[in-house]
Length: 69
Image (cartoon, rainbow, N blue to C red):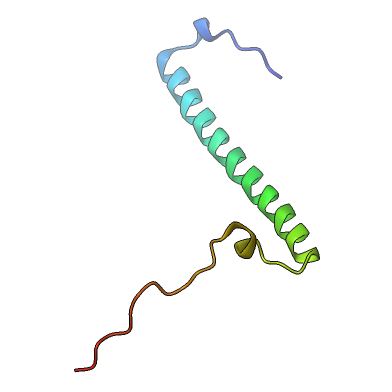
């Protein structure tokens, strides 16, 4: 890992690095979530369940049928 002398950098460089770091963190978190979800779904499928069944997020219609006119 590179060592940076942050004191020697100019403000625009620091702000660009801050933006790049925030984007890298977000991307890394997204990738980790996708990886974990894939692994959990694979385990659930081996046990003949869907992930939605296990966590209780099955999509069901919450709307009542429309009244006849």
